[in-house]
Image 1 (cartoon, rainbow, N blue to C red):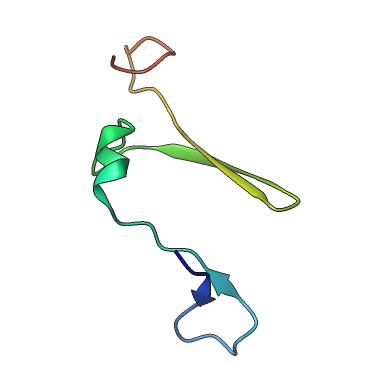
Image 2: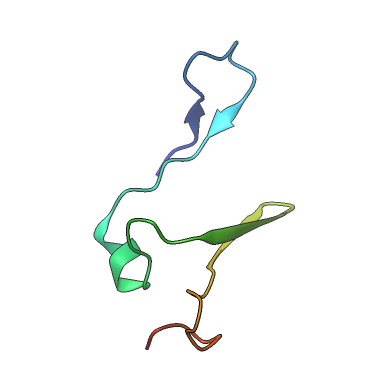
Length: 59
């Protein structure tokens, strides 16, 4: 994957686009809610539980 330029921007905002089957394998589906945490050189994406689902996910 490569960080690209955000569309319609003046070249100053980077964009990361993730589209692959690993999202499904990691229990992310269309409509999944998630949170993003940023650190120096690290981005963590965590799927949020669906209402009524245990905190550990649907597995």
